[in-house]
Image (cartoon, rainbow, N blue to C red):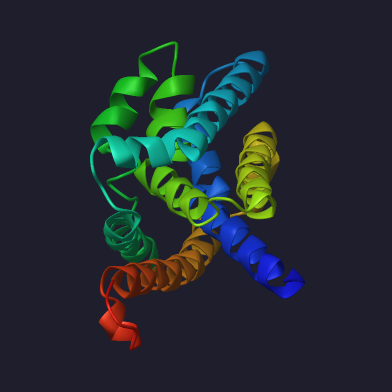
Length: 218
């Protein structure tokens, strides 16, 4: 039992950390806040983290209801979510900014706006489609198990906290991490995300087609 919880905790935390990618969020934060004073930067970091946390927690607890409302099975969502995460992972491996996170237009338009905490930082950079998908899948695999539910919530909290701290200390991080190092870390995280995405798809296929696992259909 303890071993299962530990494995689930590692899966949950690693999934959230990789898909949110605090380092990439921090580099985007730096590019969007160039020219602002320190107080404004800290306010944006704090607000964007707060908004992202609210969004992810909302989908954590209401994601199952949303699936039921649209008649979507968990297995179908696992497969679809796995495909989405696979695409994001591939873009990370090839060192490209994921189009599901931040487009060039969004980045350009946000420079001329005062309120960038919500868009594009909170959405879609931190709490993007991949992060929302991950929280829904993990939460639906935890139904009835309060220990696993606590693990998912803790994973969201830890990830957002680390993202906030990274943005808060963005100047220090940028001075020590160059583009070469960032691309290397991004590729490694992309490989891990691809593996997690494939596992999501496998779990979805086994749930949707029990015969694939040698079990009789219901």
